[in-house]
Image (cartoon, rainbow, N blue to C red; front, side, top):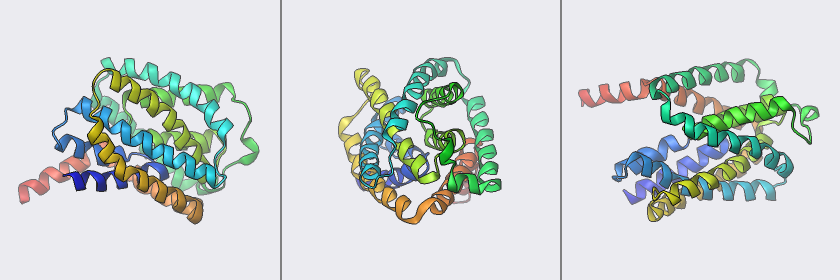
Length: 257
């Protein structure tokens, strides 16, 4: 089980840096280790924080990170996260999952129909200060991240490319920085509420950190076309999971076996 945790962590770190939704890999492993859902969610943040430390530093070393943009965009995202955490207390989870699934499908259509915008970005549109609608956009993405962490990287990446003008590689670098800031706050909240098993979180991080390092180098060396391919695959799998298709297939396979 420990080896499975490290392996799942590697996949999580790799997927999260290139696209998002990597927690869909690690959370089931943490639950299989016997952790309650809330503790698994909190424990998972250790690996998320450390993977993004590696990702941020690696993108910075390769001169792909826009520090100023990342810090500015982190502010509305963090504010939205606090609101989202309170919304989650009274939100119907099934309806929420289906709504997010619809958004994922719409995003997939955009990625497939307008590849040039995702691959090249719009450097002339990247401002040194935030517009009011960008503040609203990232505040809304922060709300999403506040009540369900899994998949926020995909929506952040869409906001950074379509809403700000980054290409996929530079957008990924800024995304990693934003999630690092958000995850530090979340980890502090979970830790103060005794919902973190630090030893197991560190074990998962043994996988996520090298996974993030490999993903960073692949993103820079292989470019936006490769990142787009990974993003498409992640969005498809995430949509199937949110609509319950993966669980249905797993149930059918279990019956057949």
